[in-house]
Image (cartoon, rainbow, N blue to C red; front, side, top):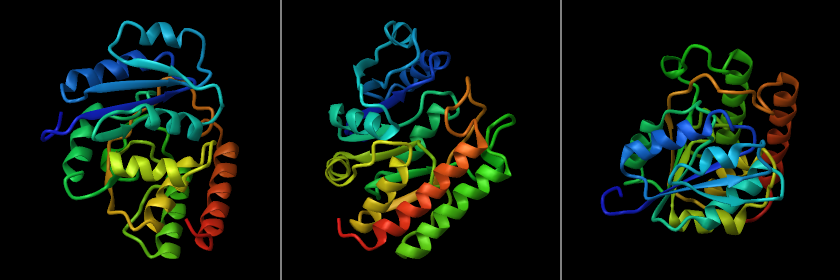
Length: 235
């Protein structure tokens, strides 16, 4: 618990078999997470066997896509505060304390991976990915006239249960650009949001998206289209 509020953690998994058990154990060691929900989204063989020895509860989501997995995890969460993180070992579990501190004043706390001092050696955040995430985030910031944003693709974030209900009601993207859709929805819904810098480390295993620069470029272009599409559509 954090300040009398229960905390859930949602970990969507597809290709994180090698890292997921260690990630769960890092969050367990914090002593503040009340429930950990692993959403198996047609994950690599052996993933369930890695989850079983931990305290995490595994649920199966057959519809493929990051958004589908996140929305399933959010719907399963039962706590006052819900964090979302990818179990690929790129994020630091202790950064959850940062997110929780800001949750005192904000409905949603988004992470950012674009601060030089917090990008670890070996992290997949070269100039192309870093500039691309920063550029799309700034485009969103300008078009929607919202708070300072520096990373549109960071998947480590935290929200309260009311925001979770709002997101489930207004977000529909089932694929990899669910993240920016959620950001847009919370901006248009006038929720209290903030983005803070987080640590970003080298990934264990290969990403199905950012591991291929061409795929990352296509995803970035789809995010830009989404930003313009949503600007003129009511929630």
